[in-house]
Image (cartoon, rainbow, N blue to C red; front, side, top):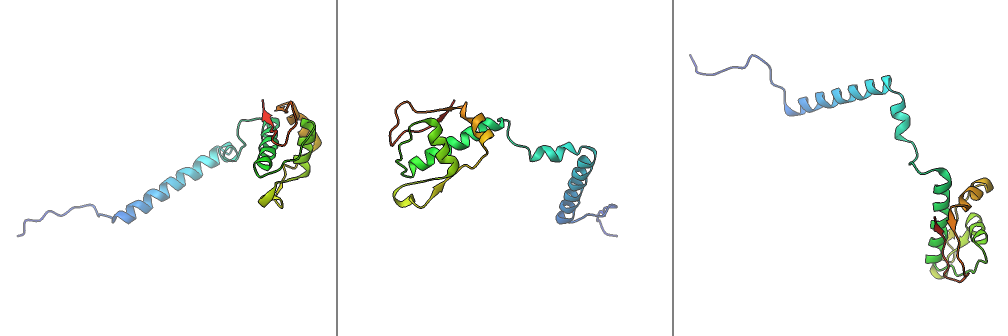
Length: 131
């Protein structure tokens, strides 16, 4: 008679246990989506910032990126600078062939305009800012 202790329950390899756990997590995920469909739609939702603010930020960052890339056009007003961004503006020097553009409709531009601070003295280095 040998002195060995045998286990009455079968032992699985670590990879088997891992695969079973992954399958269980997947099943729990499927069940949660079935009973809460809003969970999936909330994953792809936009950030909390309202659309006019996002549009204003897009216009300002595109304009300022063109300035940083060497654009030295003097724009008389904030509206002229915004129109240039919507139409597409070029950088300068090495970036003279690069087009900086934030295309959007006129209603979106009008809403965003209220959130953009223009420049007081138009120069080649004037930039835009969001309120």
